[in-house]
Image 1 (cartoon, rainbow, N blue to C red):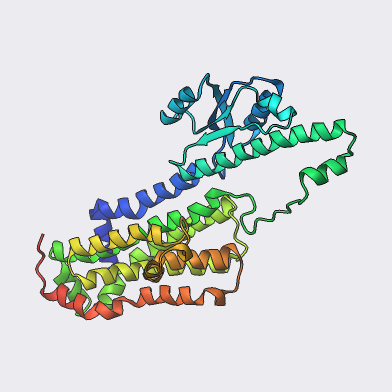
Image 2: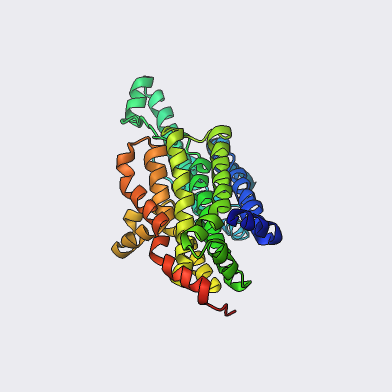
Length: 381
């Protein structure tokens, strides 16, 4: 009866359809399509080449050949290039002064400058890598030509120019796919936001629309019957969405998941149950629709900073590292990267799993207060 009653409320209130179906699906496809190429490519770069020799033109062609950089303009001066960068026409530019080739050939160490914008951290970091690589390649090319003229063999030249060879192995995300790295924490974080808010909203509207007595009457004044029956449709919808998203990213888009399907299922169950538990707890803590939703909003937004995906928690101050334990998204992210992405044992993430289970059980603490609110409180706008 309670589950059927809740389903009828879904149909009467468009907020449920919007926040439980339309917006979550839009977020899923938005983030995964936004970064579907794995990482940014063909970012606009400018060049100020005052030397204009065959050597500097070769360097510019090599820069343009990089996947992430695309030379879109040549500027007559640094001032013009800087103005273009300030107008967001380019993200970076390289400055090659007059006489660069002559100084290279005579071993007088010419200076090549490059400027890049760190307004956007990702683009700035990638372009810095390309520009620095080009600078190193320029000096190496001259050194290679000089050593060949002196009669050195290719193996001797290689040993001199690159005495240490780097054998790079990127674990788990070998292609540096930002989509696989970010979408697997951003989308679940947004899902947690919706679950927090709807869980608090669903029980808060019982007071707002004066339906709380009807809810408790149908449940026989048993608060656990009321909560279980009311949130059963919520749970099924959220699980359907999270499992559908997991199938989409791991099955269709083939995101790396060496930890296996079992851990993905467990991770989704923990996501839904811990988020619903926190949303119900927030209402029980402050039995007010407005205040409980404000707490849920604040906690969900802060979760993105405290999860450790953008900035590592171990690099934060001590009090913030402790505070990070209070955010479900942090523990979800730890379970994901430990057991799904890196295929470590579940025992390595048992603390995080235990905390998520604790979030799920938090309504037990406030159940008597929720019952009292549903039976006696009067809604105050």
